[in-house]
Amino acid sequence: MNKLLVITVLVALFALSAESFRVPRQVDEEEQGTITKITDTVKSYYAGAVNTASDYLEQIKGLKLEEKAKNLYTETSNIMSTYLGIAHDQLYHIFHH
Image 1 (cartoon, one colour):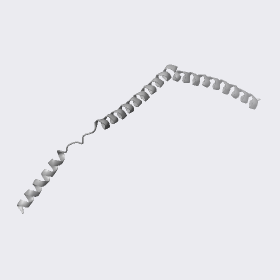
Image 2: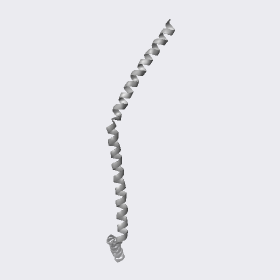
Image 3: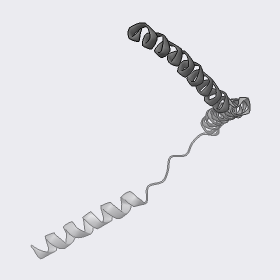
Image 4: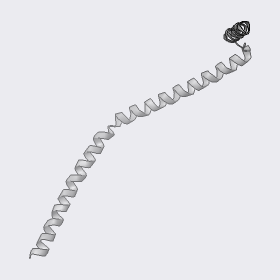
């Protein structure tokens, strides 16, 4: 019984160690070249997309849209408060006279 247990343990250890010594599959040069080409193409497209997005962001920052939006809001608020004041005065004079 002990011999069977020892043999089983040795076979299990041998199987586990043999699995770790697997030889990696060798890739043909053509296949490796194709994979490299695909990878390089994807990387170049990605780099181009990042550069284009960065250029757009720089152009948007150059237009100072935030400042223009703040100015538009301020001007619109001033105009609306003026017209609302006029409307308030008109309604006041209509109902109190």
